[in-house]
Amino acid sequence: MLRTLSRVTFAFALCLAPAMAADEKLEPGTIELFNGKDLTGWGYKSKDGKFESFDGKTEASDKRYSAKDGVLVVNPGKGTAQLWTAQQFPKDFELRLEFRAAVNADSGLFLRGKQLQVRDYPVAGPYKNLKKYKPQDWNEIVVVVKGEVAHCTCNGEVLEEAFKIPATGPIGLEADRDTMEYRKIRLKEIK
Image 1 (tube, helix red, strand yellow):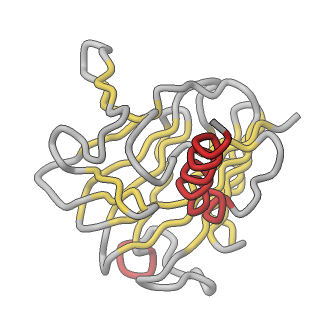
Image 2 (cartoon, rainbow, N blue to C red):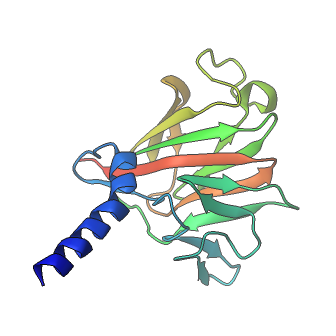
């Protein structure tokens, strides 16, 4: 019995080791909106308000979004597609995520339904004068929401000082043009 238990414990520890290393010791109260393995917690909203959940799936039904090796990939395709969290966020929060954009890629981050452009900024705009943006490399967006206003930065440079957003809603990502990658999508409610 002890030998079996130790094998189970060892196997469990091996499964968790990569995830724990990737977590980088999250601050208390921080939740990962993307688990790095699949699209659990995310899905598509239809026009009639129904939610198509991708829990446990590594790709969306139209293959526009996929999860692989800790990265949520926005794949090229026809038209736009929007991926949404199942969860709503009515309280104040800080959202942090990293993104990497292909040349001239176009995507978006929805904050309770209002879109903040996330792109290859120097080429696709609208924030063409960022000095700390790293083309085709990982960049960090931090959004601090207080009430119905969001303060948005990329690598510490202000994108939007007072971005007006709805009082509640989900977080979303847009698939528009070319390949985008997201990782470390983390949210922490603030008081």
